[in-house]
Image 1 (cartoon, rainbow, N blue to C red):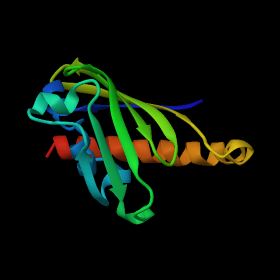
Image 2 (tube, rainbow, N blue to C red; image 1 turned 90 degrees about the vertical axis):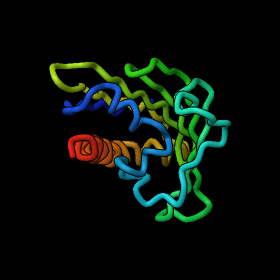
Image 3 (cartoon, helix red, strand yellow; image 1 turned 180 degrees about the horizontal axis):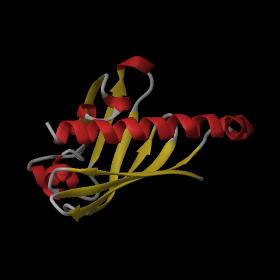
Image 4 (spheres, one colour; image 1 turned 135 degrees about the vertical axis):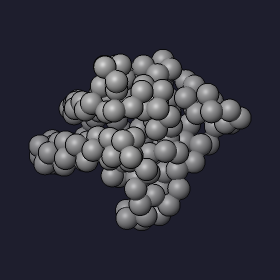
Length: 151
C-alpha cells in the first residue's frame, strides 16, 4: 500500500472547511472531479448532516475519462469538523482521510490517501509514476481548496 500525505493552512474555520468535504462539493476544489459529469449521493440525504454520516454513498463519472469509469465513495469515519474518512472504489481503491485542526484564525487541513495499485506486476512497475502524479494532484487539490475558501 502506498501513501500520499500533504497539509496546508487555510484562512477559514474548521466549520467552513468541513462544508467543502461533502462528496458533491469535490468538483469545486479537486482536480480529478472538476470536469465531472456528476457527483451524486446514492444514499438517502435528507439533511446536510446526512452527507457526512458513516455509510453515506456517492458516485462520480468523470467526463475526461469516459462514461465507463465510475468512482464510488463510502464514508467510513466521521467526526464533525475534525476528521472524515472515505473509501474510494473505481480505477483503483483508496482510503482517503481529511483532518482539520484549528490554528490561529484558520485551519490546518491534512489530506492522506492510502491506495493500492491494481494490475499485479504492471501495477508495481507503474507505482512510482502513479505516486508522483497523485502527489501533484493532491498539491493542486489543496491549492484549489485554499483558493475556494479564501475568496
